[in-house]
View 1: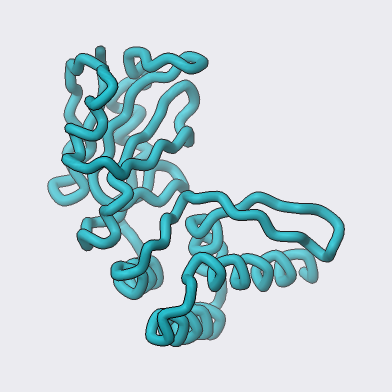
View 2 (view 1 turned 180 degrees about the horizontal axis):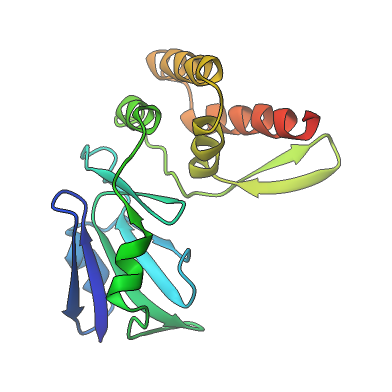
Length: 184
């Protein structure tokens, strides 16, 4: 099966011919904790869920933050298929320029059990439940002004030092971000 691997350190994209079995992804990352993202149409991006704690390099596929190496395979319904995106198109979506804000956050949360992509639910103005994740929170605060970024980093530092539940902290930050975006 045609797949692509992306090395976050060398920034190299390789086309692979893999045999997809039950343990292929786990073997590729040498880890039983992996994330599956469906950012690319008709594809699955696999990444190592422990990449943050391993202090691996971050990069973007489009707007999607990926930490560490990635394995991309095609997806048709529930089935893995050959990757159909041309390699040039995939490479054009890659951005290895990660802002200092992202790098600082990743360094702060490296010893926590946070998962960037695990979905949590928050209630917006007691009306509707919205499903978000930590990666979205980081994306929003990365776009904020320097003072807001500084506030976010200071509060995250306090939460990490106090050994608070970082997922709960990110949920609270998501509420702040949502409230800020609806007031504008």
